[in-house]
Amino acid sequence: MPRERLLLTYEDLSREMETARRIQLSLLPQAPPDLLGVRIGCRSVPAHFVGGDYYDFFRRNEYTIDLVIADVSGHDLGASLIMVATRSMLRANIYKSGTARDALAVLNELLFDDLTRTELILTMFYAKYSIDTRLLTYANGGHEPPLLYRCGAEKCSILDSDGMVLGVMKGASFEEKTIRLEEGDLVAFYTDGITEAIGPAGELFGRERLCRSVYRYRGEPPEGIIDGVLADLAEFCGGASFADDVSMVVMKVD
Image (cartoon, rainbow, N blue to C red):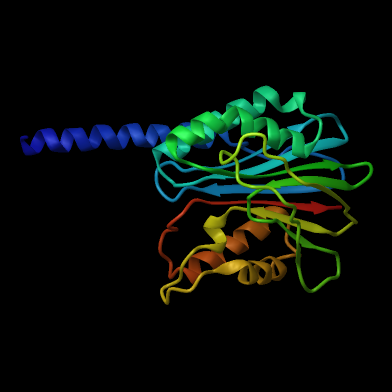
C-alpha cells in the first residue's frame, strides 16, 4: 500500500476514534445534580481514546438521588461499547427497580448474554442517598469499595457488601446495606484504574495511598479533592499517562 494511502487511513482512523472519544465523554454527566445538603464532584480520564469506566446520577425526587459507578474490563473500543449499552439499559430500567440490589440484579440479567459473548465483565457499585434522612443504601457488584471518611476521623473505612461482578452468573443476588451519614462526612467512589496504577518501581498505588490522598485534600470541595488525588496519582506514576481508565466521584455532606 502506498505511504500516502497508509497516512490517509491512519488519519481517518484517528478522526473516527476522536469522534468516539467525544461521544463517549458526552454520555457522562457534565456536572452532578445540584442538591441541597450534599455536594458532589466527578471526573473520568480514559487511558486511551475511549474507555470502559462509567458513572451516572439519577434524581428520583427533590430528596433522593441514585449514584452509580462502574467499570467494564478492558479500556478499548469493545469496553466502551459495553459501557454505552450499560448506560442505555440502566437509564431505561432505573425507575423500575426500587432498591440498589434490585437495580444490580436487573442489570445483570439484561447484560448477561452480551457480556458472555464478548468475554467481558462489569463491576458496579450502586448507591441511593436520601437527603432528608441522610441514609445511604448501597449494593456492590464486584466493584472497588468506596471510601468513607467520618467528620473528624483520621482514617477511612470502606463501604463493602457481598456481590459478584455482573455477567458471570444469571440469577445472582446482591447484599444491600444502609448507613447514616452525618454533616462533614465524605464518600469517595472510584474505579480500579486508581488503586491498580503502577509506579516506576512496579508498586501499586493501592487503597492505602488513596486513603491518605483523600484525607490530605479533605478540606477542599469535591472537585478539589479529585484534582488532588489525580495530581498525587500522576506524580506516583512518574508523570506518565495512566495505563487504565481513571474515574472518581466524591460526595460531601453539608
